Length: 183
Image (tube, rainbow, N blue to C red; front, side):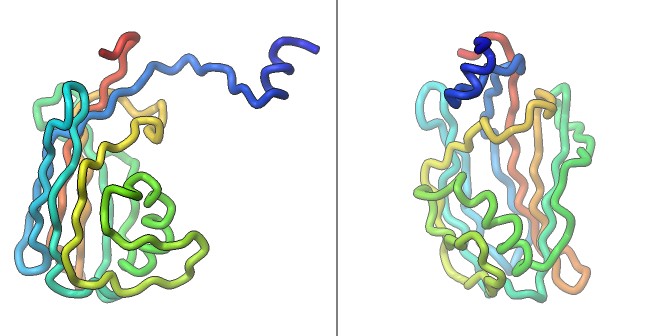
């Protein structure tokens, strides 16, 4: 039996030749009034970790009359000149978004928020109830970032629409670094 077949049989996954990735939150912005009171901020948790903290108060239920889209933009020089990246979640109604996208990625913030937990396989979850949602010391994990994503400054924009009108946005800025040695 070869060394490679032994490692695969034992469940050991040989290392990839991709560079290690560091993900660092930079800041959060909120655009739009009347729908959400967003008091999220990025704070330095320790010497190497930045976390997301704060509250977002939904002032009304988000039902299936609302739509959400998530877009990503990239600034290779880090100078806030962003280019839209083809990676995105297309505009869809909030209820569908909650059971398809949100339920798939909610493991990233379990234990750090009071956002609802939606069991996998749920076919309907609506509305997202108005109220205060908190986030405490959320440090996103870099292991979920695909290796083809380039290093640089990134902006994730969550857009919330009602009747083809953009009502509010939440923008999250982060830095992605790849190097042979991450300190």
